[in-house]
Length: 169
Image (cartoon, rainbow, N blue to C red; front, side):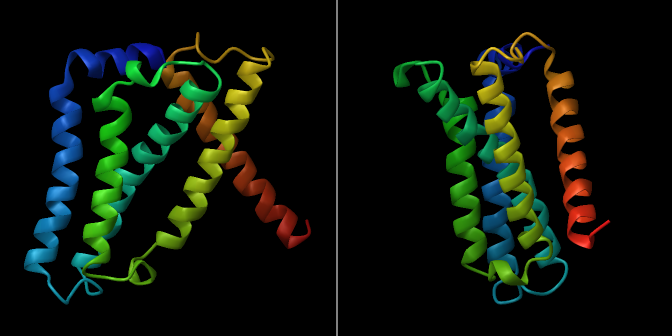
């Protein structure tokens, strides 16, 4: 399954993606209602951390994919798949807004690490897209699972490489 097949699957079966991206802000809203003023305490803060990760990674991926389509592929904005390319961004913004109503992001465990993770993933994806655009490597024809594995390997390599560099080894 390629990335195009993956997106086409959700275009043909939008129920799954709609349910996922409506359930996360709904869960954040319910957590705000039931945990009002207690967002910095467990289990609410752990729930918020999980919700942030569940919505931020697809949201950032969608932003990068949209930029790639518009800047590199010259796709028309009219051809944008609302469920796969717009809904994750709206869900991410809404979830962050709802969570921010009850707790500061500084009090959520791992949020600083999330920002670093998402920045590194965004940087890796930009580099991979540029490599493909320069025709050095063609990523669009490899299966989606191999692309994700490549991203994970690059992420782990950069992560351990920067740690070793900072320690001076």
